[in-house]
Length: 204
Figure 1 (cartoon, rainbow, N blue to C red):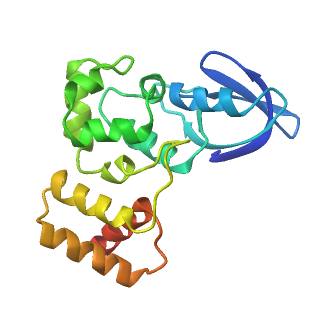
Figure 2: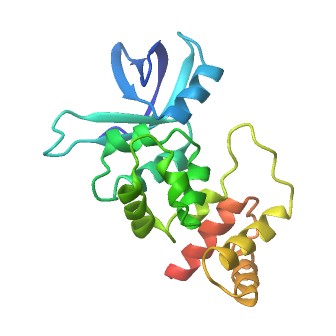
């Protein structure tokens, strides 16, 4: 199974690219939002590193490689394809907005916003919310590429707000969860890391 590729960008097409690695050309499907980033940041013959979601099933015997420039984007995509009737091709087509934005739609139960994604109608939007709400809050905290830099300390309040407003915890519970996570791992420096540590602690 392929999980990561590093090579030379051979060609850029509408929804996929070809990357040369050791004399072999890999055709990689790229979600719309990620493709925009690649077109802005890379040209043909540039070196590129990609996190790969490798997909092969009985219904889809030909392997489909889907590429991402950030590991968390791949992780979000692999959650999205756990939703019934959303396979790798449909998920890649739908991701025309940042994973953080789609995650916020899910956590806020915003069916209308999800319906604006390519190939997502009302029924699929409801399925996405029913399957993933409560599982994607950490992605809603991600900073989009080129976004504002997170100031020290800001991320703690941001995580507390998500715990209270989106996940139903009381303010006291949220504050305690944040404090305990920071006590376990004082090196945490971002909202994503803090959220992961909170839920790592809850699984223990």
